[in-house]
Length: 126
Image (tube, rainbow, N blue to C red; front, side):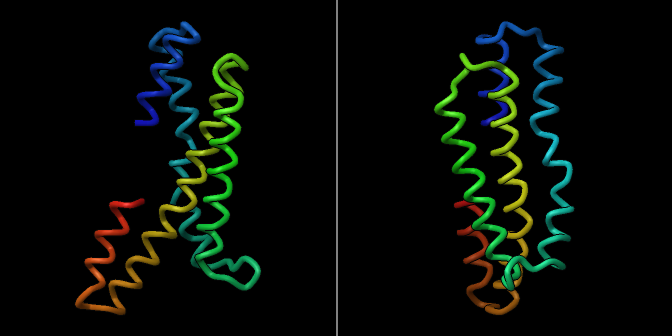
C-alpha cells in the first residue's frame, strides 16, 4: 500500500515518468534488501543489555519520527526529502520485522498449544 501511494505521488505530484518512478521506488525500498542483517544483529548484539525488545522500541521510534516528519513536510518540500523520509519509515519496519518474527517463533516453541495462535494474531497486527 505504501508503494502504491509513493508511485502515485511521484507520477502525479512530481510529474515523473514510469522509468523515474520505478527507479525512485527501488531506492526507497532498498532497506528491505538488508533485513537479514538486522536479524543477525538482533541475535548477536545486545543494546544496553536488552536482547530483542529494544530493537522493536527503537524501530517504532524511528517510524513514528519519520512518519510525523513526512506528514509535516508534505510533497511541496521536494521529491528527495519526501522519498528519504519514506525510506526511513520503511527502514524502521525492516528493522522490526525479523526481530518480531524471531520473538514469535520463540513464543511458539515455549507454548505448544497457544503459541501458534499468538503467532497468527501478532502477525496480523504487524
